[in-house]
Length: 390
Image (cartoon, rainbow, N blue to C red):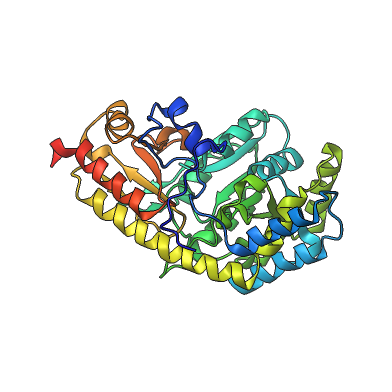
């Protein structure tokens, strides 16, 4: 397939494109949607073939015998990430926002604190707050355009009511691939404060050359009794609408608590998501991902070069993800002004930095997982919108 193909997604109930004008005021007739984290590419043919096979059969009943599906997950994690997964440790949730909510529900009580390293994926705070828990923001240090952690500061913040910490690895929106030392720091932090550690690794397949993602489960065996891993096919293969995610729990006691909440809520997987995941986690799916990352790498360089030419703007170097985190603080503009220029001047819909928590105030997030011609248009429009600075 060609990632350059421009696919018209208007009128398909695409939240990214069909809701762009209503939410951001970016005109549908010539706006560019660079907000919601899904891609404007078709998934690999193996996934389409799996759906075609379901269609040809014509009966959409309950899914039984999850062995091939779980075997595919285990194959992928071992071959792509060097992580041996016990099939009995795998739970399927309705995506990883649901997985996050299930973890909060299973392992904390109302009023408990849940630690986030902010700025970070906005759905975490939304789910935590909606569950009546307290969001505890530990702000990442922006060290010359690179996010780092300050565990001495975080230790001093803890008040004793915190029961869980959620890590985004690789990091969204900063694009960091955390080092082994940083991951060990998170593990030690969780142990020091007796926290359940939920590691959301949904972007782990989208890592650029020169960087290697390390699964948290491979960092420190002593945290396996407090660790919950979350992965998914949805981000990697652009099948977010299937709403399926893997919650992988090494410890049997933690597994039992999670299973009890799943049973109490009557949750079971969507068969479409399972068929798609089994097809995705395959050699054909792996080859497609390799091609995808190479293409995204080109888009990444294109946007970074354009941003670097605009005085006062800087993009964090992306080590992973297709989400570029652009800082406008150097312009001296208030947030409303630089946002207006992007949305009304350049006609680009982007995510607003403050929704990601403390530390995101001067940023906007751009989704570059779109045909290169649209990235080129976006770059030209940004240059025009900020031409008075050049």
